[in-house]
Length: 336
Image (cartoon, rainbow, N blue to C red; front, side, top):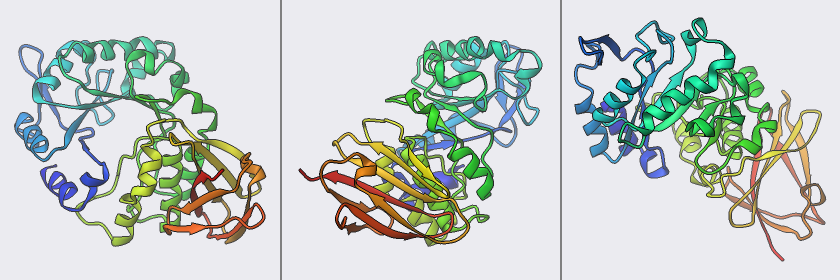
């Protein structure tokens, strides 16, 4: 964990906006006589590493479950919500991923909102600002109530694996959820797989582009201590990150789909538009983007965010070759 903090500072990720280091499951030990959950021997002192992470200008996230046990079989927060939230606040925790897991053994799906509200209230009463990540895999139409229980992000899918079929299924299923996203609360189709090695760089660019068009959290899931240059160029592309972090915080939506061609657009705070043209097929494709399809009255000034080159529309049309499972991601500024 401490090595990751050092790496995020030294490799440019911190400067690019990656500020949270999130511990997932398996940090938990046993509860003491007062019910306070202690970390296990791998984390003998949680306060000290939290202080170290903070000294680097970063923030620390932790993991729990509303059930008796976490996914890995460690103690969950069932019956100890207020105590756990206070404990994490005392440690200096800045982020909680709250994973449904074994809660399904004692609760019904109809209980989801009330159970997540219980921890949301506990975090608010903890005395510390803690980002609240709901991990319920998109169950119970979470997008309709996630913000109401204090959620800042909520999972909208099952786990995304480092495979094209998994990422494609999760990523391209987000269109109907767009109205739920906004400043301070976002749809989360799970972590980025960029750099884990089982997809191509073009496929990783597709995931990074989709998640940025969604205004979804960019949670790097690779080992950031040892990254290929191509991985760095994807994760640290500030032009793409700026689309994700645009202050309007609106989620992009699908404009249209024709066969393997899938076109999405996201309105931006400056009045511009981010457009992703995806080739979901297994062979390269010539893709035409028409001004009229974007609903623009004036020709846009456009930049390709992966090549960083300006492009021009010819008679209201731009044609580009998009590799298999690849993307053309553009930022359009309408020139009146």
